[in-house]
Length: 336
Length: 196
Image (cartoon, rainbow over all chains, first blue to last red; front, side, top):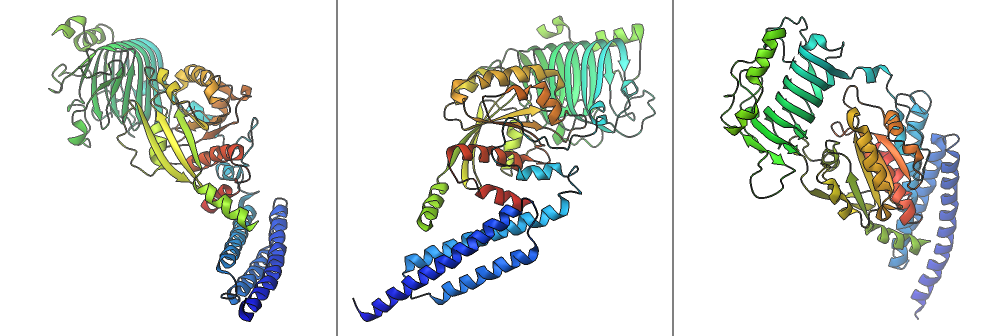
């Protein structure tokens, strides 16, 4: 072994000892700071001190370049990077905490979730961002009516945007189209924006809806006509329903029979609706996942031939019944 | 210390987790996944079959299986249980009418042997909708507090706005990591802090 190597070796040994000692010292100071930061955040000066020590250490290591075995050198660099990262984390945890730990906590609870401990279990901290109770009452619903013509005026007072649920109706016409189109004299000018639709248990009904800004989920319809636009359409356990749809994805049916699909009627579409939105779509029947065509629905690309006279005006009694009889699909229609 | 750090780091690179996304139809499972991976979320059709997404999250590679939730597809869920590290149960917070259905399906999953020990994250999705139920309402309706067999947490989120999706995923990944990969859980919180 030559003398040069010898001196290098002894340098590397002393360097390693010193370097590791100062690294451990720094590491424990960082650990102490981050531990105490749970109680009180470390002062920026303290963090600054830590990063100065780290900078010094980095400099010593850089100075020793060439005199250290390259493997060791790499190791030390990695260790320093790790330290740098912990200081960075300390700094990051320091800044937001002092800012909103107390003041903004109720509003920013969602943000504080980010820091939730990894193994909190059966009794998780509930984020405190529960909206005021009023929020749940803004939920729109039309329920339990028969032989009625229902418009926006029959909805409970509501915000301009809401999700809508329609349930338990029979022999009803529901018309929630913008008032410019429907001749019903509803005095409400702001267009109703429906963000999702849930419909359940309707029989012998006509439902006229504008574009729903979300998905439509429909269960248990019988002898109905549904007109709507939506992002997604799912219909379950329904039979004898005519669906006039404006949609950009594939509508699906499941456990359904005698369903007829057609594009959204031009006569009811708002001027904003483009041709593209009235384009035809591909129906998927989840009860018939085969190569053969599903027997449960038919597609009517020929557009709105079934109905040309939509019941846009409020009617009642005898007239309502006549309108329903005229529009609603009958078993005999299906044979055609 | 030095060598051990290196070894751990190398091991972390290979860490994978298998996460199963389930829930009733219309819950928003696919939309959440597409949002998380930065894809377009308009024009998503109801899932016929399943989707797989693989992406890196922190030090982990997540293999996420998203299986369609239509009633006819639910019997097939069990084909995906094997090797599942975490179950993400997605709930449509606007769907009051099917909460019972939702609860039943979830409870029956939790009795599955092959899902024993998997972490459970419940995403109370669609919080952007006016009038959607809060996470507390859903927690009570699904009776989540009675769950003792799984680590669980409910997280309000919105697939449309992206709110809380990453933080929810952080929780579930950390929870799995603390179980599977000893002493390697420190890296994720740092990352999420940086996001704040």
